[in-house]
Length: 284
Image (cartoon, rainbow, N blue to C red; front, side, top):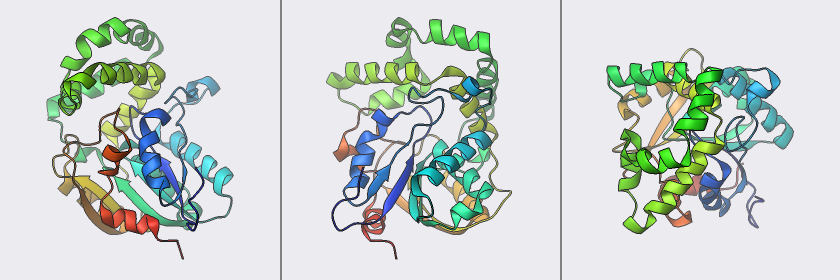
């Protein structure tokens, strides 16, 4: 999306886990009011071919290298801004650690409910271990095929998905008449996100430690008061270990993210006024 007239800022947007370009289109629209926006798919997400197609594994380093390649092709030697979400911010952090030359061209870094370490996740020890074991099992080819063909069949998803722990919170935020639309979009997301990549990304989040390198950039961190995934105090502690400055800003929403069918008006709630002012200002 080209920047509006009179604006020169370019924002590179990286979505999180369980996402696609369609899910993030309304967020791109919000940012495009004040800046140019580039939003790439990630390998294995949104219907894009996975790293397995070229004999690579979708770990955080290969994802980081992919983002670096996209940035070098898209921006050449230009300066640009980054707005990254949740898992996407973890990948961006690893990219900036691996490519300090790219970090030197970032004029604004925004974390939207991002995190830096597996201890930031609020899951109980038992739930944490359960997800890790489950993700590891379904990251193999045959179990992943079973997951894709059976567990992710539209009938199973329509019947049982809304009763799972994570889905209950998603469905609680929509009106009754929107339930069917939300269910169908969730089915779409599950079908277009490649299972082995999804599981590998889950393992990445549950084992993440991005605190071993220093990035010489300040980070503006948008967080929510009742985040159902991350502990804000833990996130702050770990981000201060990585970045030269940490600037927290509270977003007035109830959940980790707007639901997957949120329109532009709802998605705008994720961006506090201060962040929009920063994006609106042309970079020096």
